[in-house]
Image (cartoon, rainbow, N blue to C red; front, side, top):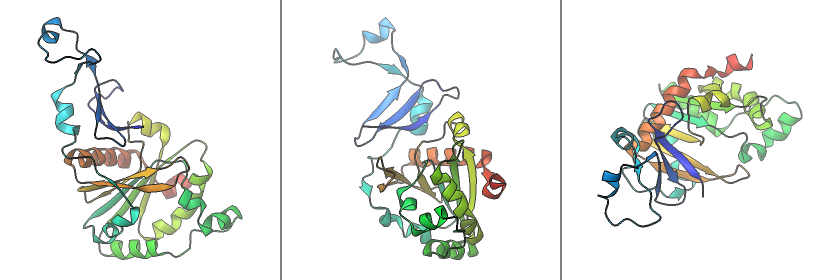
Length: 239
């Protein structure tokens, strides 16, 4: 089972931190071990394998989940959100490649040296329609040095998305790690709902976890603000 960083109140990479244990309803807490004898003697029903961790109240106030863990659902279940959102649809892309890109007919054409930025699609039609209505489609893509093949493909395709109205920006993975951004993909709709992606080891989308839990939404908003501040427009990055 993998861990997903929920949030931390440490700016230096130290504890305290909360993690979700994927596939369970359990939260893992990282912090300083309690060693005060006066406190330990007051604990109740202590089992030999248990440990006791100190964390600041602010960590739980800001990041502790306030609802049950969402269930995995098909990506198609959120397709309506891309039409019905009221203000902003924002995406963080963290992976080095996506199976959906590699299976696309555009992939083979791009590998052959063709320009794939001008291809029409239902996605671009919707983006154009929503942005014409005053809404915003935005995303930040993490990139490696050197760029992976999947990242090169997305960079080549980006002008079509930008032309339709998306604001796509790029951020180095090293900088994202310094900022302690999440290491998973998600969409954030109107700072209200989060759709977090699940992938297999082959970069295939398994589905999304959708939640309006205030702690999850807050963490996504904070990640968005930090990423957006430090990322550069795709056109600038491409130059």
